[in-house]
Image (cartoon, rainbow, N blue to C red; front, side, top):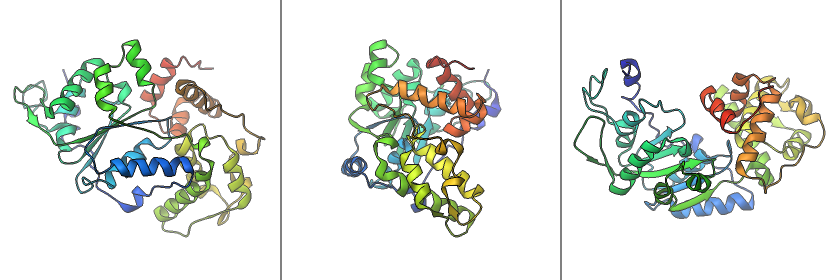
Length: 329
């Protein structure tokens, strides 16, 4: 039985429309300039896009940039976190349901995909979608129709799909945990967002961008980033990528004593000498494992605190700890 309280959460999906401040796209490094050019080349098209990259590197930010540069920018952007969809509700949340489809279904719902009609649906963490729902999503992509739970009528949808993952989908295909036909249907255009350590020229511009965001949030003048603090930021290896940088700037904006962020204002690990370099040749899962272990170590293995550092909820963090066989000690 599905509680009615859960059903009500599906009635009004999260819908975004362009907000200039939220869609600023910082790209000064050659890697990011090339990625931006490719993204803007494909933005006007209808092709499905698969965005890959490490946790926190800015995959959703890229998806929003593509949407804001497309002909669908005046229509909704619907982000769907596939890793947090309740197993019992996943089909209802994605495809909608009709009244009486199950206990607590007191009215028809559109579901997230139909709510994005005319716009863009962004399927984040697509590698976490269970196999049965992968098959149903594949049919939506193939036929451009949606079958609500409990209905016999399919409804046409005009949606541009983008999906993102930090997992190696092609390996999952070989392991039988991700459908090959869905992978190739999603992978029409493949964009890979580089890790922040691979684009050091973007670190300080991004930091200043986040400083400006914090200043706007509190309606106060932006802090100045000192030369020594900027150099320390450039030297760090950023296991948590752009998300980690954003969190640190927010922390510094609140805690710095003056109007300038100085080297001494940065967290202690920025003063502990050169960081251990991370090989760009590492497999994505190895990098993800190191990132989570480092976050757990920094927070005394408090999952709630580590989740906040990584911007992951407890459910997603626990799932990754189990999948990556991370010891909790």
